[in-house]
Length: 329
Ligand SMILES: [Zn+2]
Image (cartoon, rainbow, N blue to C red; front, side, top):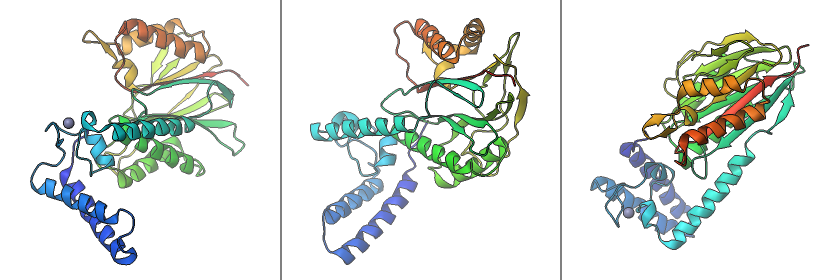
């Protein structure tokens, strides 16, 4: 759960006020500088009066994620005026487009693996991270990632895009997956809102069928083999919690036809009539679909989830990623 850290917001506001005052001194009363300055002062006054974060119309709490993005807001979602609501809708539409542009190519074959994923935000944007990055070093290998930033909505989606940028920069260093996650963890710790963290699976796979996996507190990926299903357990804590966390990795060699199945908790924790979809049902369905293509497998699991939900809507971001080894040279 995300909580409102008022003292942190107060510090931010004071810093912004200093900057605004400085701008007014240098550029005069240009644009809406003075108006903004008044708004910042008013927000600081609400903090002093213990009314910060309370909607001035209905006296209910304002959504914490929204305050983190804009600490000056005074009304809850329900009490924005029509113009504000329209602007918010447009912003969310744009954010959603930007986020979809950050997703990897879908339904592809790379480094001897056939890959398919499904990325379904609960709202306009998702806090889940799904990525495939091919190495350009001639090793015929790729990095696959699936993460889940705590919380939902715009704040989580911003951290998701931050995480993506980190891994795309880090991939140029020749690091093992656990070192990649260690670096990402330190960067995440140093640069984010302290109350956020993320679970993550980071794996490397090559055309020889060798895989290396590091899991930072994420739901266990399933390695679906001809005669067994191996749950790949966590090798460290979620990222963003402790700067000095160490991570291990696990290595496997897989056969042609074996499938790696990754998912976010929006799948197993989906609930209907107080019952969770759960790992057991998931293992059963993937087991029955083990000879399918990644696309058929992902779609088959989604169908089974819909059957389970029987009309109830899902409430969390949901991502599923399947990689099947196609060659065996
Ligand atoms: Zn309200």
